[in-house]
Structures are given as structure tokens and as C-alpha cells.
Image (tube, rainbow, N blue to C red; front, side, top):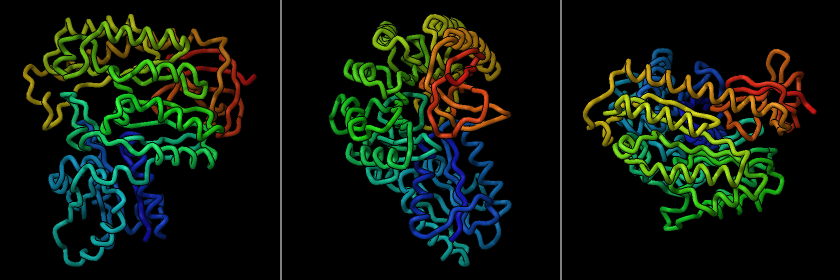
Length: 438
């Protein structure tokens, strides 16, 4: 069987997509790059926010319009889990649905659909218990010399705006031994950077009553992979960052001095409506502690504008916080109403045009901050992981930049892809740095 797989959404989805590809290939099937060459069409969908759902539905509808009678089309992942059979009406031509944690049943589902194809039966929906199979294999997605390594799935945080717990279920941590084994395997294949991901990496082990298990996991990975160059941590919940985590980050040079800390807002009233940590004094102490322990740390955050009831004063408090906190990286997002969440029942929605205007103001402020912080990097010497070439330049990243969401380091000439080089920073743009190889 030849199959075509389109992966949409976040790195966590990408891990599941790579896992499906590996499983199908191990079973003797062949991945193809064009949908018309395939017997089975698989879309690993994203259902996180409205824009992501629209992208997933558009992809499914396009493939449905183009598919031949002898092809099957399967929607896998988050939107299939979240919407269930509603997705069959939204994307006519779908032949089956596969839930978020049943990816390792993909071959069996394809075979069932192909067997039933002539009968024109009702499309099967394999959704089931969203907690099953999370501890089994399939925790990695390699991209060049970097790789994502999933340490948990699901989420137990009470955030009022987020549908992830409805889609993925509560947090379930993978066994430490399985994660370490995956890390060792990646390094043996030449991976230089491993990026740990979960809905909340700092909640690792809490579902097993281990209150601060992440530092131990980091230590185990580093001890087992002496040739690993960078270990990067994403998606840290602010109140779960412990002194032990800060200590190991500060003391272990292979742990990137980089932290993705999604705060979502900075006004206590909005944060309480979000069911997020609302103690700003504690947040300021955390930022101070991180920067005191690691003066060169690059901090990233994510913020939502236009949350229900957000007043101009509450938004101005957010701007004031951003101006003072001076994050190296910042992702701004318009609030998106998600069915079934607590926030969907809140009164006083913010008009779309007001949301858009506020987002523009937020990102304009952050652009100024980002440029100033990048200008301060001029003269520094940084290690850069080369990822490609474009127009006579080599494109790479330093420890300050996570793949796909942060900036780049641009260097003259064609340098070997997948290798680390030492570069002196000579110039700065709003998001990227310019440099020369020493």
C-alpha cells in the first residue's frame, strides 16, 4: 500500500504523524509525496483553535474532491477526536476517523475501510478512550539534526479557554525509561538537538504523584546521551517551575538557557477568568530567579488578547507588563471561542475588530523590544546549528531560538547542514541575527 500523510498543527501532532509513518513503513507500506500516487490519504488534523480547524477542514475537502474511487481518506488526530462524527458532515467524502491516541491502529483502520469500500458503509469512527496507548512507542519526530521528543500527552490544567483536555484527556506521562531510550536512539542517528514537548512539560510525573519529576528526567537523558549537544525545554507552566529545575538548567551547559513560559495574560482579573495563576508578584519573582540564575537566558511567552470581558484598562496592564518584562520572544494570539470550554459561557465578548487592533499594538511593542534585545547580541559569539541555505546564505539557529517559532541566524556562504559552527554576531533585525563564522 502507498500512503500520503499531511500533518497539521503543533510539534506534538508532528510526533504522532511521524509515528504513523514509521509504523506503516515498518509494516511494509510506502510513503509518497503526492496524494495522487497514494492508495490511502491521511490527514493528522489540528482542532486547537478556529483557524487550525479551518485549515484542517480545507485540507480534507481538497483531498476529498481530488480522490479517486479506489482511494480512502482518513482524518486522524485532534479535530477527529474533538468533533467526532460532526467532522464527517463538515468534510464530505471522508472514509474514516481516527482519534488522538489510536494512531498505532492506523493500518488496521485503513484495511477495514478498504475492505468495506465497495459496500459504501457508514464511515467508521475509531475514537475510543483518549487515555489509551500514551505510554507505548512513538514519541519522536526528527527534523534534520533536531528532533522533538514527547514526554507526556494530554493536560490536567484547568485553563478556561483551552479545549486540549477535552480533546486529549488528562495528562499522562510516558515512562522515564521509554523517553531515555528514545533520546539515546536519536543521538545514535546523529541528532544534535532534542526538544522536549508536552502540553505542560513541567507537569511531567504529576499524574503518578511525582511532584517534581522533570529535573530527574532531564538528568537521566543527559547522563545517557553524552554526545547530545542541546536539550531544549518547551511549554513550562509558571507555577510548576521549581528551584530544582532552575538549578539543573543553570548548572548543565547542554541544557539550553531557553524557556517557553506561556503566561497567557498579565492582569489578575483576566487571569482569574482564564483560571490561570493570577499572582503577578509570584510571576515577577520567577522571572527574576530565572534571570539571576542564567543571565543569558532567552525567555519566550504566549499571550491571548481579546479574552471575554477584557477591558481597555486590562489590556493596557498587559502592555505595561510586556514593556517591563522584556521577553526575548513573544507569540500573540486572538482569543478563539472553543465549544465546551468554560470560557465559551463567559459574557461580554470582545468585538473582532477590537481584538485585531489590540493584537497589532501588542506585537508592535514586542517588535521594538525584540530588536533592542537582538541588537544587544551584536559582538557575542554563539554556537549555531546550520539548517539550510538560501540565496548565498546559510540559515541556522542559536540556543536562543526554537525551530519554526523563533528567529534565525544568517551567515554568509554555504555551510554544512546539520553541523554546529561558532559565529560572531555582527548585526540584528527584529527577529533574526546576522553573523560571521569565526
